[in-house]
Image: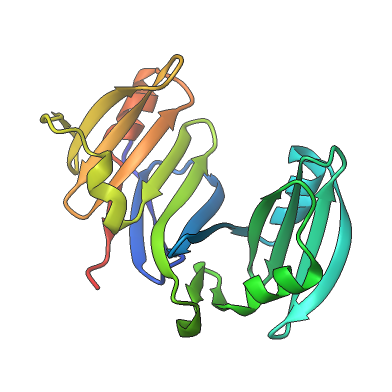
Length: 226
């Protein structure tokens, strides 16, 4: 593969990450997740493009909208799954949606409002930044990005603070930009862990032909130094 494409994205924490992918194959989706915790309390969010919650409520867990309201001028949509096993609440930005999932029915209106009201949200084409307001005493515990590349596979990129926990202790095989390890998955199958000087990626390939392995070999991930 002689061509390459570069994505310059903004992670949920506001950190910048540059991702180089070999070949012209399109990135079919980009999503992110972030988790906050403080004391005995923790909550997690998913971030996707506009239409993210509608897709989930149609194709993942069919759901019906039960509430709509504004938080800091942005609409929040609450939906409950038809089977009653889950519900979602999503804040709609200009470019992305911030979604959280509950087990069972959604909490009361005031609790969902208070949750989104406790956050500062900045949205741009390159990513949505989400930070808890100082009064909440919450800290960011983890974040990651997930990219899907049509025909080649899925790339999960943990944040810099969590990257070291994903790297095996033994040396890996060399790639164009770092090292690679083949790691078994629970049950069956395997994934590849790529380590770079300023980032880590976990890759599940859509096939195991030589073009797939060449594509894996040329990936690069680099988080910007704060």
